[in-house]
Length: 461
Image (cartoon, rainbow, N blue to C red):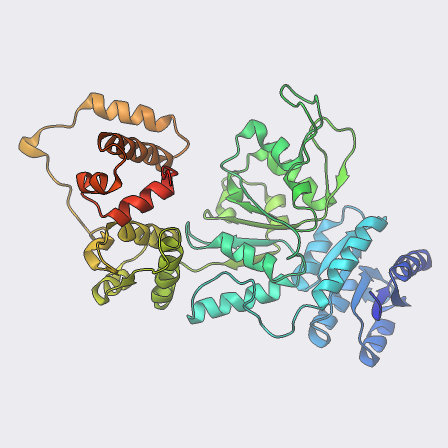
């Protein structure tokens, strides 16, 4: 880390000396000043790798320095030093463009991690790069979103990603991680609605051996698993209120307390979150804590629905078909003109996720190398319910049986997958595992059968 320079702004000589010694041991040349005026004078004369500034200064507020650096040295990371527990000011500084914050008394281990991340951020390419970006599309909407992702990747501020289900919120979060200074560390996504409430605290913060029945060994938890990287809370609105309190403390203090532990453990993670719900509305209704919302919503990034960027559908469809076909064949089928027109005319309430499901179904149904409109089986705009023969009602017992079996699974998709496995296994056994005869018996193509078997883990080859 040679040839690195730091600007330290603090009116307390002891703090300046501590920072100078610590940064000097990291082979970083440090210039220290006590006022905003001195800092601006130095910044006008030379460049620095990064800046550390106190918030309370004799001739003004640290926010003034943050805003000055954003205007005159936008690529230079600036971190703020705040009084213990004064998180509101730290949030305001990050909204103004600060890279990160550290609380007094300064913990040297945390300071070193912050400095290393700041230097890596300053060394990121100045030109926009698609390396690590995961979004597909060339529409103006996606271009603006990609530019925001590039900018946010340099910061350590929490980002609240909003958007409809299936619109690609996790891909946005992964892109922010991949393009930032933490790209070499883990990215861990947590679906807040999928973890049982009684296990949530242990999953997030870990536990020590013997802390509860079944805790036979220490477990680090997801905060520690994501150490140095990014922790993405998907569907964060589903967190129960008691866990919201504990998450708020973990984010503010940058520490976690494993279940059954006597002391807190320092963590170094960047927090990203997303939900298809309106967090503002959840706060109004009392389902989400306002203080946690304020802490998570430092920067908000909206992901557009697929219907708002229909010009991206051809490129998306091509990429998705290649991904779907990869497990079975090297040659992905193409879309006919009528199939592409049908996709362009469809509203996609399920967004990109629904597009992928439609193409996956079409891939298994089409007989040749081209997917036609009929293969897509798109829902009709206002298709009437088909009447039952002779007006006969469905069997109440059969409906109840299916409902009961469905409720025993975590999701409808899991239940339907089980039924598909039963049908395929029964047909294969009837045909003595002759796949050609099985495909004929089921009325599907051989490729379709092979794809389904591989997808469900039933292929014996």
